[in-house]
Image 1 (tube, rainbow, N blue to C red):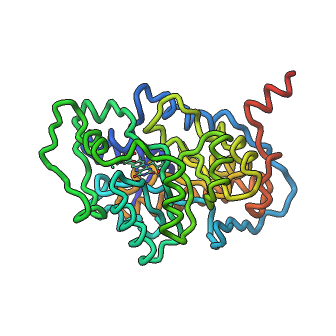
Image 2: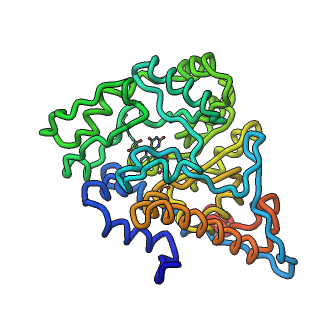
Image 3: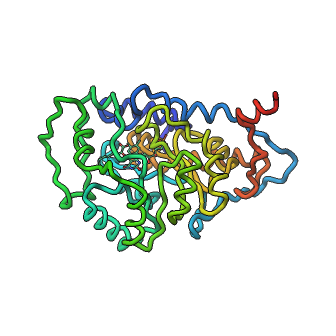
Length: 339
Ligand SMILES: Cc1cc2nc3c(=O)[nH]c(=O)nc-3n(C[C@H](O)[C@H](O)[C@H](O)COP(=O)(O)O)c2cc1C
Ligand SMILES: CCCCCCC(=O)C(=O)O
């Protein structure tokens, strides 16, 4: 075992910053425009307090849960993210064990269909359709750094990558996204996706009760409360602040997942208490990967799991099912208590 291993996600973030070229660190770490939502995704967790229960035998903690009928050892999963090679040469291979998702529908539906077929034949269990990225958010650090579009090996042979994309205007990634992403993406495309696959489809990027209800209506198998890690629409609400609204709207019809700003096991605990079935982490995995390769990514996930286990024990919860709404005190709760 190496000496002086980081003891939390934030320390991994510091190591990642030292390890990576500025352009790559900024791409991974940055958010859209003023980065209000980026800060708030994390800060909003800080405004939720825990209500521990005591004198409960917590000598055995079971963090296992089920999602779409599959057993999982923990409710923490890796968010669908691209470009892991920016963090480490091993890239996605190093984090693949935890990943089970497909991504955005592209302008070229034939490309999307090929990716879906590939996912099916490789034994993936679900498709994640990212619905918050019809166009790319304005990431000013990438514009300043003239961010070069990362290689996307899964698209090789399906799309052309022009290395000479003119970066005069700033981010080459933005240019690539402009050519690739489909701003006309709409609810009917969910129908289309459903028509070409029997895999369950989860919609990622829902932050309102209205869209959550629609997602259930069109037959989504799950809803992911996400603002894309604050990389798309700045001033979108921090995800933990709208999780409960979405959970209520969905009313148990499908599982609700959440991501954005999760940096501690206590954050995972808070999300579970507010009704999430599972919680996804994006940047923390990149930090681990950048700092220590596959071992770092694994350590980050392990640390979050151990932190969750501790939070459960100290709150008197022996299983995920025992984590309830009564275990957290939100800002809203505090305001209502004053009225
Ligand atoms: C470097 C990077 C690449 C990402 N790529 C994708 C992507 O290709 N598709 C997608 O739906 N979300 C993508 N995301 C967003 C994540 O899935 C997730 O919503 C977000 O990272 C969660 O916030 P967190 O980083 O604070 O945990 C990406 C995020 C990062 C940081
Ligand atoms: C089709 C190119 C866009 C890739 C964007 C990756 C991503 O989602 C991100 O947040 O960055």
